[in-house]
Amino acid sequence: MKDEGNNIHSVFDELIQKPEKEAFLKQRGKVVWMTGLSGSGKTTLAKHLERQLLEKGYFSKLLDGDNVRAGLNKGLGFSEEDRQENIRRIAEVSKLFSDGGVICINCFVSPTQGIRNMARDIIGADDFLEVYINTPLEECEKRDVKGLYKKARAGEIKDFTGISAPFEAPNAPSIEIKTKDKTIQASGDELFEKLLPFIRIS
Image: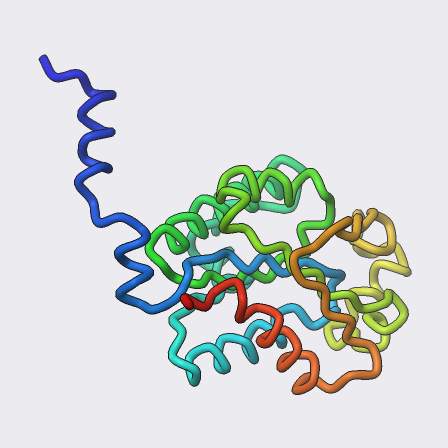
């Protein structure tokens, strides 16, 4: 009978490895983990970044709450356990993209350092880029298109990050973008320029 553990390792060893895929794609496979309050501009900037990357010849994949919860995490709710599992699954999928040489752009509030550390541990510190979209709470409330902050203030939404649940800002993010008093274009350009050193193959 075959040693299943050794057999699994041998199969992985036979796969094309990350450096060869990165050389083919002419980029470094990284996970761009964008964190920030609801309304900070994460998804808007991620879409801007995705377009800029494509126009400059970089291949990326964008993950956010909408496309992840529509399929991969469709059965998960918003309990603490389900939120943890949501991030765990996202991190595992992101690692697969990164291992394939793809730049994976993630937009998730992921409000605590603990939950972001879990994602970093799964993905690997070398491939995990913590990007803090730093937008003050009052500015996020002004942009409250969906009315979520208003509902949270009225007590209609429980455990809403920034209102009835804490948000722990990253202590030492790989990249920090302060969006207040900046256009989307300006913030997006800044994000792209700061990301380039991490993904460029010299």
